[in-house]
Image (tube, rainbow over all chains, first blue to last red; front, side, top):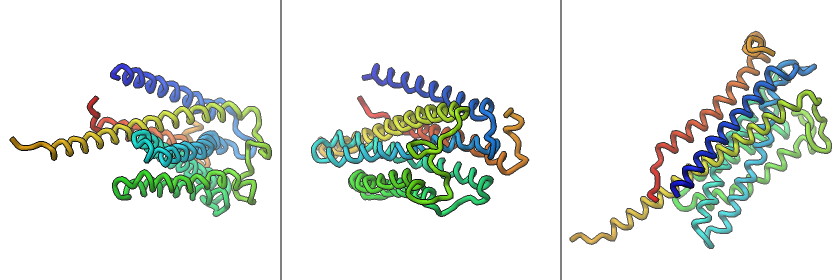
Length: 244
Length: 47
């Protein structure tokens, strides 16, 4: 067990090193090596951080959904497995809030100089804000719901929250929006070949980073759960002790 | 682009570019630091 923990720690440090190295290459590509875009100039470089967070902010909610469904499936059949799924669900929800929040913030910082406004209540921006609010409410619900009910209430909310993900993705195809048309996919406008390296390096880098922090948050939640179980067990043992 | 043109605060566009690049690293790094702090302040379960 000790050896397994030691090797997992080694893998985590290696993963962190690789993620930072890829992100440094992505930063160098984005700022120093790639030429400025013809219309927006250097402002376009915000895209290289905005896009990876936007894409990954639509993937982590599905990790939360899968873990929540697993929790609902196992909660009566195998409570220990359900607790593990619950820990993964909360980890994925926190990383979702982080990535979607950064996507919204970088979008606003891009929108003000590019469009002249911080915010537009169009379908893409509004559905993305709603996504962020749904996962913030998920975390608040878990935080303040009665003990023992947090996992179940959160899992049910997560099923509804995940419905917003395809709406966010399709919003720029279904409605006319201030937000630009899709870049990728069958109806995507695409990007020039010279802008691909910073896009790809940053997508891979922020993916490696996101998976790492999600797994770290998962491990932290498991540690909390086990500490709580241990405390509960000690309390039961203490209550059963007969004074001599 | 060079470091001097990157750290150029003369226009709103340049300022926001710097805010994005530093802000993202600070937020992500801050979250990782909070996780590490919480990890060190959560009781290790007995094996």
